[in-house]
Image (cartoon, rainbow, N blue to C red):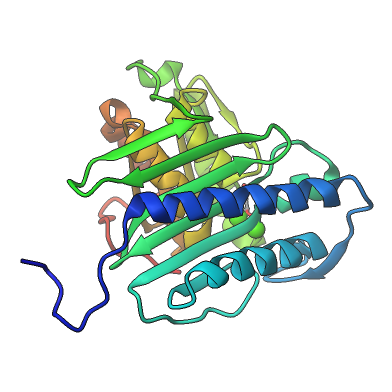
Amino acid sequence: MTDHPASAPPAPKSGDLLALAVATARAAADLVRERSAGVVEVAATKSTATDVVTEADRDTEALIRQLITRERPEDAFFGEEGEETTGTSGVRWIVDPIDGTVNFLYGLPRYAVSIAAEYAGEVVAGAVIDVPAGTLYAAFRQPDGSVAAVRDGEPIAVRPPTELAQRLIATGFSYDAGLRRVQAEALVRLLPVVRDVRRIGSAALDICGVAEGTLDGYLEEGLHLWDHAAAGLVAEAAGARWEATTGIGGRRFVIVAPAHGYDELRKAAVQAGFLPVDSLPGVVPD
Ligand code: IPD
Ligand code: CA
Ligand code: CA
């Protein structure tokens, strides 16, 4: 028996999707690395004057689209820099060609390629490559629903439990000045109750940091699906819990923490004013 009608395309193997995501992310990372060696300039601005795009962002997304479409022309594609296209297979690729573009622009070595594959609305495979370091984070959902994650082929796990006051929390700031004010005000209330805060500049690497245990948690409002789709699966597989919901500013808010410390961090996020008191998971703006 199958869950799909006879006419529906067969469900893909998430291991095959992961293999394509990894091979494509490696090729994309090579291109980004090559471009980082030259002069990096702003090609255009997007939502605000600080939301920049470089030619490398555009060319890398075009390469990713070309490599994936060549192998799986029937899939949908949703990337940060290009037109969204629909497909017929039930698979959608969710791509951020360079997560951490401002770091890339300034030569700060914290930026990543992020590629996720979603089937029937659920992310089933994800690859994130830390481009300057060359580290690959990869995860896929097995047919029984369990998830496995590796960093350069080795298993990874979240940090052990620790009290909130001892936790190192990453965050980020929106390109929107109004939302930044809200974020800064909430941070004033969060900072005194945790060990410290990091603003690394790549949401995908922040979330992979929670997965590998170099961070105790991450929260940020104003993300898009392409920022967290692949890394969220990596984090889940490594023992984290994550949620995308609506933040106090009305935009997509993402919070990630080891499962054992998740409720406490979420409560602190509400108390600090990142989240409305009655926020519910599942109501997620773009
Ligand atoms: C940004 C980075 C940054 C986060 C921003 C994202 P981009 O992605 O992930 O860390 O704070 O919210 O938009 O623009 O470099 O792809
Ligand atoms: Ca991004
Ligand atoms: Ca980007």
